[in-house]
Length: 582
Image (cartoon, rainbow, N blue to C red; front, top):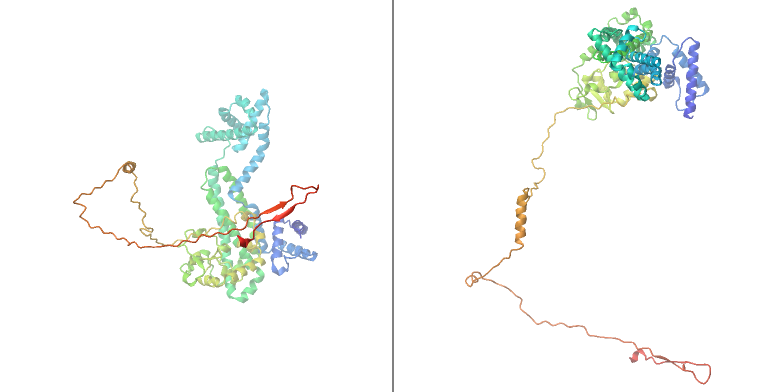
């Protein structure tokens, strides 16, 4: 099926599911419907084959399954998926939040800015009207007071006249459109600075909110609210974990708890915990920023609203596990926090010598140990695979296993050893569990294994989040004193005067002659000997001269002079001698 046709079919299926849900009184966003369609198709128990084209009966079956799951309001798994979709659609980075806020402000000011830059005022009344528009633009852009308040307008006008009197409008009108827009922004900043200075001096600042005071009150209040929610969610997660641990040791109890969707409830609270932890650091950063108070006020209101809207997604598991039921299930069970579980095995470490082909990382040997991207959000992979989906936090102090450029943590050393024996087996088990529980794909960050489920907010960070470990170890090196034989040129001279002296000496030698003499007394001081070979008679024989000659051809023609008749007859006579006669 061509891509365009397949896309059209998917859109039709999503639209049909949305209409079915709306008919039952449930308005479902298209993003949630699309996610549910992929989750249903991915679940092997539903019997869909992604390699072949869906038939009409397959489409009807798919629509029915999706509608049933979307209308199951008492399913914690659905709440978790709704929470994930809502958070992904509404949460972005701090920069994107503020960028969107600034874009909205620019769009609101575009009409006022266009009226000012396109103005062709000539008469006095038109110029006064233009100046009032500039004052309104400055107030709207700065956000320090309403342009309908007379006191605020008078203060802003006085501040503007001190740097841009009305007599300068003629020069302003001669500027280009871009220069006008640039000057309007500069005037806004100057007037804002003047009003803030006057407010600090107690001579003005009408309508300017005390943003530091507002943030000082809002940040602790919002942070406290998030902390309380986070504490409640963590407590619930610890209790669910304890019950599931108890059920893992008691098969009968595990069968009794299966209809109550306890694992799905654990996934739900763990996902909410992760989202709240994502939001909480932003509030901590807000308290350290005092330069852009208005931006922080907008940001805190958005994050507070986002936190409030996460609460409705935690209601389903409370219906299955009210406080009375929880007390009965927790009878004889000690509820442990994640910190307590880590402290129990903090001294147990993996022995690297037991693994020759696998690499283990430890805090004392890895510089960026805390920045490594741990698989499954730091939960123990072995426990999750072998205990039917129990989420226990991994303990990095035991050792982080590096396998195929991915990093895994475990809650005990035995779990680490068992996982290291056959990592692929446990990874496949976790992948199959995620197919059956679609909320695990985002909860455990399995997006790379299921590329179609990569969320928009995380798609941009997939390549950026991979960090290679920087290992530390004690090493020593030694360098030979003279690795190569010395290449010292003894005849080298760096002094140019010395070179000149040698050059002159060589030039003078060309004009010198060596003389030697020998006296009568000195020639007898040394005996000289010489040896010669005796002469002998030697004869040689040369070659004999010889020659050969061929006869010279002699051919004559008689009768060429003619005769008595008109016709001339020639006779050819050959007088050449024979070869043997020569």
